[in-house]
Length: 116
Image (cartoon, rainbow, N blue to C red):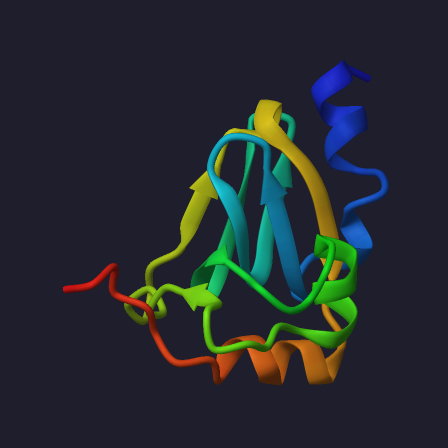
């Protein structure tokens, strides 16, 4: 079994199809439905969004449990239906399942458009 095959078929299998938050060391924090995990990257579906900044929520693990709040938090608009986000796995440092309340709070957060 190659290293990539072993990586693909282990700890992340139980998260496929689940609502997850992904922290990429360079690209930031995103949430959506985890569609695929490979040694070469991950794909999020379900109209994923980026959490650009949060002022209430603490760590990414806390956001996965309780979501975000605060008037100064910034969450991008959802990706268009049928599109997803892909990341290079070399920079991913966390993939965590999201609780129902975290998903609701993050998904319903007003879209930040960067001042546009």
